[in-house]
Length: 135
Image (cartoon, rainbow, N blue to C red; front, side, top):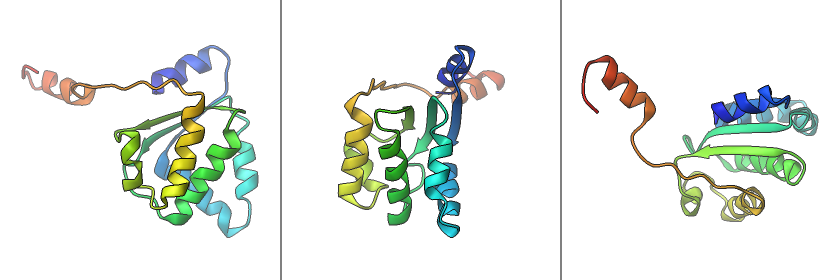
């Protein structure tokens, strides 16, 4: 996804990259001073928002609602690239509210190009190569 972001920048697009945890932390800070809407509007100035590591850590109800607000605001207005190790049917494991999880996926998948990768981690292969091991 980082490569996708680089290609978009080289093509003249504005890109923002976040891990899911960093994005939710940013939105949480907006709760303290009632600026979540302004933060989302600022994020939506980018042509592409990349959200990586979705599901790496579970979200609470508030975090899930904040993620939904961003996805709903971006829906049919901005491009989102979302990376997760979890198949869609298991997103309920880290998004506690089933209805909100379904609503997020509904908006993400409506116009999506889904890329499913499989195989060994590039980082693991690189580390093994540096140690002289065969993959």
